Length: 247
Image 1 (cartoon, rainbow, N blue to C red):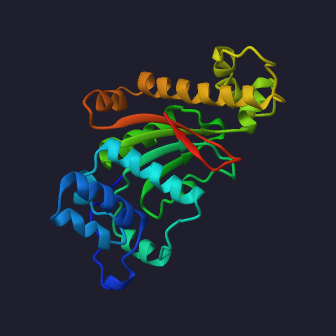
Image 2: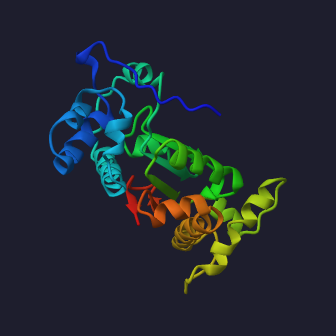
């Protein structure tokens, strides 16, 4: 697999608008000072040098701000074509996400992210396996992403299926990977898929166990986290409110 680290030049400063350009610059500039990095405010796509100046904590903070814009109806007015053109020659995503396939939880939208901002792996029940870990290792070790974020969500159908011991073709094996979270969830109420608080408690526990699995099954990512190069974090998205709870 070849990796292209070329940045795309910009020809029209009037169109230079994007999430990383507008939002990342405001927070990161305060942390790293003025100078070349402040130019990110006028770029359609983040360059390698600009991405490398962001810390994992700063990236997570900016994701939180993006979600606040989403929930308050103040999302940025982006030029998607400009972003597509700017990122065509190279990409420098700041994070890799593992989220569920649920159509109501698109990570880029609910965090006000745009083209080229993140790598996003979507898997029913946001579970990890060797293929997912390989993608994460590529994102972080080879491409320089600094955050691994596992995001579950409320009212998750995969979680309900695991609770109900559902069986259907290959889905049976997938749900089996979620069942440890069902067993590990401490809950005193009704432990059924019809009890949504229990479903959501299992979903959160599933995120926690997935994070533990990433650290256990990927010495590459665990080592990068131990050295402070990356941060592995979890989140839960509330379908009813639109709010993401990071932890």
